[in-house]
Amino acid sequence: MVKVNENYLKLPGSYLFQEIGRRTRAFQDQAPMPIIRLGIGDVTRPLAPVVVEAMVKASQEMGHKETFRGYCEETCTAYDWLRYAIQADYKRQGVEIADDEIFVSDGAKSDCGMIGDIFSADNVVAVCDPVYPVYVDTNAMDGRAGEYDGQRWTNLVYLPCTAENGFVPELPEGRVPDLIYICSPNNPTGAAATKDQLKVWVDFANQHGSIILFDSAYEAFITEENVPHSIFEVEGARTCAIEFRSFSKTAGFTGNRCAYTVIPKELERGGASLHALWNRRRASKFNGVPYVIQRAAEASLTDEGRAQTAQAIAYYRRNAEVIRDGLSAAGLAVYGGVNAPYIWARGPEGMGSWDLFDLLLKKACVVTTPGAGFGPSGEGYIRLTAFGDADATREAVERIKAVL
Ligand SMILES: *Cc1c(COP(=O)(O)O)cnc(C)c1O
Image 1 (cartoon, rainbow, N blue to C red):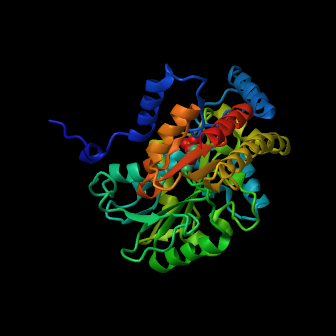
Image 2 (image 1 turned 45 degrees about the vertical axis):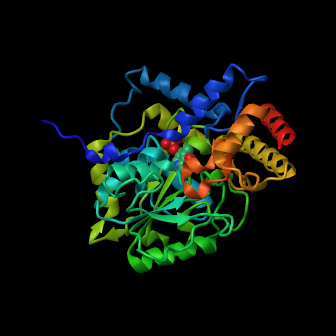
Image 3 (image 1 turned 135 degrees about the horizontal axis):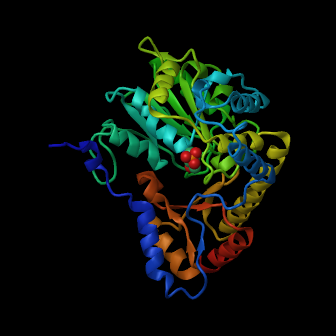
């Protein structure tokens, strides 16, 4: 008789977006005006023209026997031209990495979720609170999280991110974590860690033999000088960090699927090279990203591609500004939105996240995301995204101002 992985049975239902959907649908028929959705974190601008051209051209190549491509046999399952393009992108940001330290994949979500394969189930895992749920759920699936008590997992170390610490986690006082997830610029809070703040974590990880799993999916949204785009801008990171990046938010690839993970070759734990372990794992479980998509990703990193994708980023940034200014004018304490497409807003004193969600849904017909859904420290907050249509965003903000 088959036994299932019992860790899966401990997982709570993916309550947050289901519940948002349920409440929105229940209200939809009575809504006095069209509902505007500023909840889900998905891009809406079309792909850059050079990216589309590259996809069309690559698709046609696949239709001719001279230019047809099968499995990609290159190191790290990406063509060298894509690895060189990514390497050059890092170099522009002042970071030197070898091209074969780059593992191209179909998503940062997959990579963040699967990196646990190369680590023991005994490791102590630290996550921020509030947090991108992927880090928590995938560690629970691997048996590292303990039991869920309705709010928290018993074995995880939670690092509270609050207005007091600027939503950047402080070093833990109790148990020393082995694996530390840091997402900067952050989903959901929109906060971004400075170089000095990240240096504290890098020093801690090197001192204790921990590994920082650094998610920089939103690096393209950084506007401030002292905020690093990569953990590898911080001295010492090559001996303690793995970085996850994605074309999803930087080039509008959420439907195209392309991302990459960087593991320095000198990164070792217990005498083993993590680069070698991940390479081995990938060789056995992954056959790479479609040729057409790799060409699309490469095109997004050309000068023209970067100029075109920058226009979409600028569009979202203007939305972020509109949301920030509007909610501040409405009297809310507003965070994020400067280096990230997310705005994290504190509701009126004493009002819970779901109460504020309901108020904005029913009075303003605007869908937000309740902060409590990302962890206990998110209670009292809502998250709004800047990924929407500009006119709809302006309209939503006016409606919110009118009801608060
Ligand atoms: C959107 C997002 C990603 C990107 O995931 P993909 O699988 O590459 O689309 C990664 N991390 C965070 C925190 C995100 O919000």
